[in-house]
Image: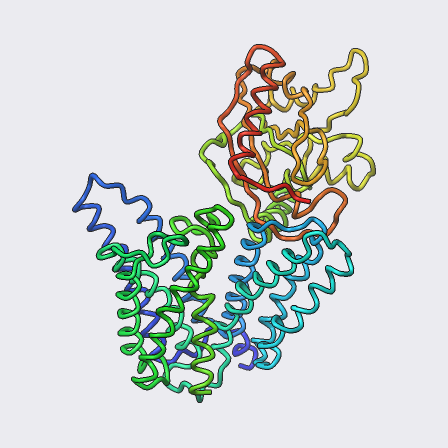
Length: 320
Length: 213
């Protein structure tokens, strides 16, 4: 019996979380149906891009739902793997120095350590490891190699990359190991679903509001497609959803949920805009091609790089 | 034995390494041939080049995939020679001036006549990472001898960073694979080599890559 228990890989899902996971699948089915209907209504238009987009959503959301249905260790490995893909994409895009090959290897090693701290719930180390210890270790390794030409840019870009792709994203995983008592209705998996779901829906809502009513550009130099109409409509939608979903998935009161929406909405926008600036500086449109119809990993986790740490510290401060 | 070991090696070691540790950004995959005989020509920066090119095809085509490799390097010791001949199944090529009356491309010709997919690096050596050097004209001899067999140019970027010459530690980087339009025999060696070189140079410029130093 003991042995059998050890083999069980599934998480004991709270009913609320299980229902919310079913909600995600329902949304995907609705998306696929919507594309079908569009193709019938407007047969002369080409929907290849949209179809690719929805198909990739199925794969991503499918893997995400699967990861959340598994025990903490597996789910944490899943988020660690996302960090690995994101860091790899980042380091492949930015100009790096030949002399730093070994330093980059060390940077990758930060990922298993960071997610290990998450898995054992060592908050102090989780929050200090990359901003303090890795921040010191990597420049030291560079100094030992001794190449000073281009040092400032190399050390700065590498640390920003680690913060963006590993430190911030690992906050999603830390939500899983928060004590159950803080969120009796849905546990850590519920919080992850709330954060990731709202962030992704916020992206979609801003896009849809912008497409329908967009006129006045917010940041024309960075991202000409982003409009005030899209931004405000998106934030309003996200905040309404945040309030509606809070009693199902979180311990947040109605007023706290309102603020959570007002953190995730603009936070997602700014995270997206930051990655957009990064890409514009490099002169690229997509960060990669790993997610057909979406681009690269960074194109998909861009908003999360800001919303994950912001939401984490908000809920940490108010309920844990 | 190698009939089992070779697919296993590619399934368990090479594919996870290329697809997960590295990861590929492939442009115009549809230009890759469905089967042999064909000559794939790519720039060369790393031992990983061969592994990436061999991963572009389904495992069912593995028996057809034959990288052309320098005999003086890969057959230099018994262990490496066993691995190169049985697992990678290289077509060994003698570098340097040919012996009189001996065709150095004999083994390549035989492979193409069997319908194999020949993988060729006309730079001859890996050289400095992420730097293109002049092509050797051996490929022109092959193209002239087999004018009906297509030559497919491919540009690889990123592998010189992941595993450059002289390093043993692999550092993960995404690898860009740009496939170009196939080239046929042009009628003479000089124009063929010019067409091939400019084709790979054009593919390289597509990426706007900064030099790595």
